[in-house]
Length: 517
Image (cartoon, rainbow, N blue to C red; front, side):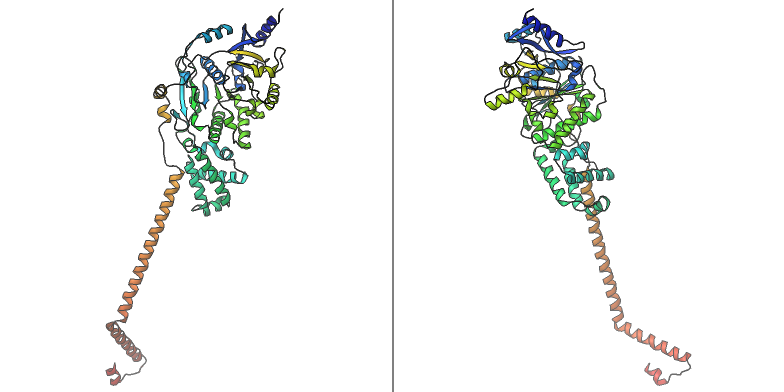
């Protein structure tokens, strides 16, 4: 038996599964595609997460696009983090050409261009359905981790959340939180310290600076109402295709803290609301994070720990998370170790340091008798990748050089008019694009302060009136007493009383006395 025949049997035995699977492409050996070597990934293991990596221009985004299409066709909703803005083409059918036809002939599957149901979302002023979350939904622990606070400062945050719970103050946006920071160090300081203990003004100042930093990255637009419901990411269209939800993030590339905040809140919300389903036959939702290094840039250790924890646990909720990045080392080792599917596009080796790094990266992949891994990683062509997946039993499959399927949808972005049309037809637009500004902690505390100041002003005015009235009454009495008539009446009264008293005692008054009187 020839090497090619042995290789074909090897691929067929390791990449053929009992359950439903997605076709990724066809195997290549010695630079030649071999028919009958379908490289697949079982749907059952897609909640074990994965990675798509490779240098710029090697086809990562198109692989992500193809993957999302295949999931949608299987009735699995997809969420895409579109950092570069080049994934919106999923909403329009692609166009065939000779190169695509030749590629699919090698793979052994026909090429059928088609469009997919797409929903466009935005965290900022970009066009799309607005995504928001409230501060209270984060909770004190998660909110403190986002701000990168120490234990003392986190204690102040917990105090604020507790006070809002006790007083039934809605804590919705950053404006509410900043007002509460002011409240606990100003008009509410005495009452707060009596009930909850002393508060460090230094800690409050530090928290306020962290909030301002978050605001400068655009988080004030993210925190608010109407809060997004993650169940809306798990919709199917009328034909049974999974919706591809694309979050446009082109304007937050330089705001990694906002990106990290959003991702953490999204994963945490999914974990808290999705039911526990273990290992289903296919995932409930698959998330692709393009340019994933942005989620880890400037993230504190506490934040990374939180992301790692959720990545480990969210698998049992039927959610798969795939990180797309230029280099596997962009992903922390603790998270990289959780990723079952690895699609590695070409890496570039221009320096000795690059070659050493590629050598180390190659050791992360299963051993193979058919390829020298470090050489393979630097010689992959555009639209080719080194792939390993988890079998249905959770065992990594052998590394295989793969010619990847081409996207069925448009390999370019949508026009502005096409984007406007998608948004206008959105069933979620009315639900989330209406701004709600109800009475929250900010307004309630301000109203209380205004009412208190008004009461003080009223009290002062009444006090002044009373004092003036008392002084006026006193002056009138004094004038009456000191008048000549009053003095005369007083003297006469005293004289008559004296006479009466002397008469009682038996003493007679003389006429002189009487006349003098």
